[in-house]
Structures are given as structure tokens and as C-alpha cells.
Amino acid sequence: QVQLVESGGGSVQAGGSLRLSCAASGRTFSSMGWFRQAPGKEREFVASISWSGANTYYDESVKGRSAISRDNARNTVYLQMNSLKPEDTAVYYCAAGSGYYLDPRSYDYWGQGTQVTVSS
Image 1 (tube, rainbow, N blue to C red):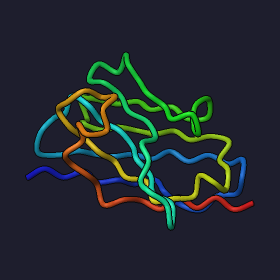
Image 2 (image 1 turned 120 degrees about the horizontal axis):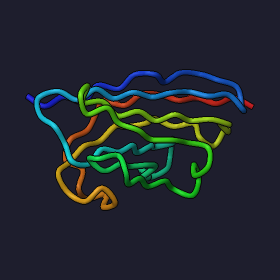
Image 3 (image 1 turned 180 degrees about the vertical axis):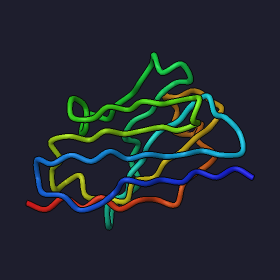
């Protein structure tokens, strides 16, 4: 059974940092990524990474402030978020799939979500 379990969310003040982790079990995935959904908004594609880790994608809203990485030996993906802003407040979802890492439709498996709250 495939499971994605996120951790690392929490409440921080603006300018702070958080590191999200997502441990996958049951199989490995060529593409892993992070999405987020703020109250009243649609889910958005935040960052993703290819199997080798050599290729990454960041939404413009987090580019330069975030870093996605993966440890295939641990079947885990990470999202380091720095200089957090109140507009980063959302539920962050880990996702995994076998398709192209840049295509949001590639992600078939989802975690339960972890809340990130950034106060001003």
C-alpha cells in the first residue's frame, strides 16, 4: 500500500523558515513534488523534483526562497522554505507519480497535508 506522510509544518513568524518532509512507502516514484492550498483558493503547484534530483521546478511565488530535494535511499522528499511570508500560509501536500516532474497531472498519490501558518 502506497503512503505519503508529511511532517514539518507549523506556525512561524514572517521571515522564518520551515523544512517539510514527506516519506513515501510502498513504492518509489520518478517524480515528487509539493502543492499547497490556501483557504478559499485553488490548489497550486509549488515545487517538484525529478528522480535524479538534477531537475527541479519552483513556482514564481516561492522561487529563490525555497529548495526541494530528495533522498531516494530514504524515499523521502524535502521542501526547505525560507523568508516565509504570510501569503505562504496554506496546507501543503506532498505528491508523487511516475510521469514528468513538471506536469501537475503526473501526480497520482497524495499525502494528508501539513499546515503551514505564517504570521506577520
